[in-house]
Length: 294
Ligand code: NAP
Image (cartoon, rainbow, N blue to C red):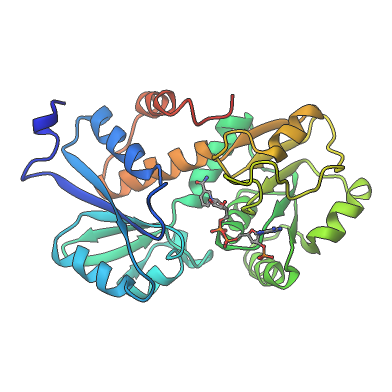
């Protein structure tokens, strides 16, 4: 696509509501997808101040923006400003994608499905019957707990610095799914690790994210075992300290770039009403290979 043709009067306009947005990779991902698919669309980041989300949403609606993503800190608050909630939003209670259909807004959550697809592709298998430990108690932990339980996870341990936050998630998972769930404080779980075997560890805490690249949520003396799978939703840096610890012990590891790419593809499909082919997904992964773990 030539530069002068990049944005036209007929372009679909898409966007991202968040704060901060300056470091988001989403504009690059969505604009790359449009280029790969030859679709005349442009995706723009909008930094929205606290207390202004309602006005921002109204603005996008009256400007006939086709759809937008909501990111930190708006994934829960956005639900107040839409007309309809997709099933994907109801259990997790958070949305990352909104579609504008003639002024009627529907909220979707593509993070859970994006994580599950990425996990299967990056690890080579899914959650069915396995035991998992989920570190963190924020919005991402809630969404991923639902995604794993809904896909037949065998056992789930929710671990967080503030244990009260995961007790609430455990109750919600137990209410909707048959997967047995227990909760533990992070410090207690790290100490007790040798007594509790697990197959999958997913980190959704922000510990280890740039610029604090030498920090790890499990501490330096934690003992991983060969054959365990460790997924870090962080993708900057591409190899967190946690992933390096796990690799050194012979674990299979993956970072969160695959999740970011898949949730974007799913959002794009919702906005455009199309199916993105595996061939295009492969090309997208190639374009962002430098963010994926080496
Ligand atoms: P959040 O709601 O702010 O939750 C952050 C979590 O990190 C909380 O559980 C918090 O524990 C924990 N934490 C923070 N500092 C800690 C420390 N020093 N020691 C131990 N625990 C600590 O954030 P979120 O929205 O769930 O996002 C979490 C992470 O996921 C972020 O890194 C985000 O970039 C990433 N993410 C990635 C993708 C992707 O597509 N790859 C998508 C969404 C999010 P407390 O509860 O005790 O405070």
